[in-house]
Image (cartoon, rainbow, N blue to C red; front, side):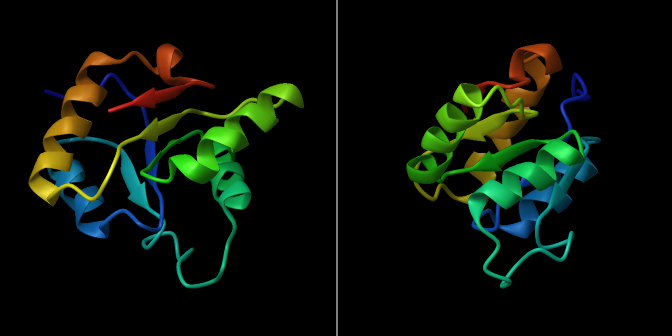
Length: 118
């Protein structure tokens, strides 16, 4: 099934192969690796700004940094395109299934400016 049109940007810690696999299934996903934003010590705030500027929800397992970042943005009246969080480092096949389920079930308006766990 095709996505409900949530565009996704994957964080640096997400295996770049995930974006490739998701595109094979028809999803709009770009990894930070493909965007040339790895190994440059880009902080999480700037990664979220990049994702937001490109109207993409960010996929990450970095709850330690992104949950407080979401709170800070809301206090400042800033809006992001969404944060998709998962825990641990699941095998890529498991993460692929979880992301597909999320993208097939969640409306872009629901993901917008919201932290959702997948």
